[in-house]
Image (cartoon, rainbow, N blue to C red; front, side, top):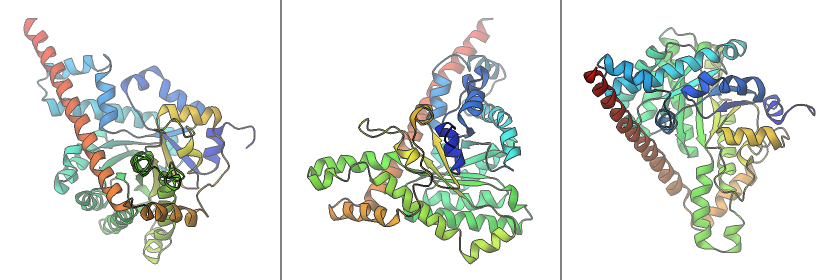
Amino acid sequence: MTNATPTAQLSDAGVSIWLDDLSRERLSSGSLQKLIDEKNVVGVTTNPSIFQAAITSGTDYDAKIAELAAQGASLDETIFEITTADVADACDLFAPVAAATKGVDGRVSIEVDPRLAWDTEGTIAEAKQLYKKVDKDNVHIKIPATLEGLAAITATLAEGISVNVTLIFSLERYRAVINAFQAGLKLAKENGHDLSRIHSVASFFVSRVDTEIDKRLDAIGTDEARALKGKAGVANASLAYQVYEELFSTERWAVLAEAGALPQRPLWASTGVKDPAYPDTLYVTGLAAAGVVNTMPEKTLDATFDHGVVTGDTITGTYEEANGVLNALEGLGISYNEVVALLESQGLDKFVASWKELLADVEGALATARESILTL
């Protein structure tokens, strides 16, 4: 392992590296293939903010938007066509990885319309539509872990559709997500689906926890408070891994595993460091353990590849220390439950805002394209 790159060492430690980004340019230029070949990337995640940035930052989608305008496509239809096309093409790119890992990796995620986050039935319907449209075995349908989303997660899995559960911040909600996952697999089995072909990850967000809690620690301003800065994100995620170990070693899980089910892997999301005072690989090398996924923005991936120090498993055995961090925060009057509820609300608001920006920008592009058609 000593001669391997840090990303190769991370892979050897059992961490699957996924890129938290996708665009037409990445696909057409070969840059995504290069990351697969050189930096051990074995999957991709997307979200509304990523699509908004991709579609509105250049001219890569202009021809497709003009084509759809000529066909009379609506705004929602246009965005549906563009995003699913990118994801389908990325699925094709990762097909060899999926084949080599029996579908565990080589996954590409696409999220349901974030405006449906509080609509269980709407989420289920769109999850089915996205899955049918992309039509690739290695796609993940991404569903937010809202209270309304839990039933949608179960129902989607029951249809044999692989799911990426996103926007998880709290340990309590993570337990509910795993319960929804296992309930979905039980129903999928009853529906006659092959459980070994259903895959899932649970996206547990990391850096945003530190951003919010550090702000509160700065407001307290004591030496005791300052000493806790930058520790909550890793501690929270480490305790999530403890929950994962616990709930995937129960009798309930053993029955599903016997039927061919694979565990829902923890995925560390929001792993780009927000505070420049912290090491830029903090949420990568500090959260290494067998069976996890780390989805990184390219800047974090590059930093890890360049100078990440991988020392194997950095999670197992840290649970007492992690609990101590969260208990100390509570002792300072920082409410864990209040913070994680706020972060879920902010995360959803951000995705909805990005989606609305995307709608406005594409609507403008469609209008321009339609005017061009009329003048021909």
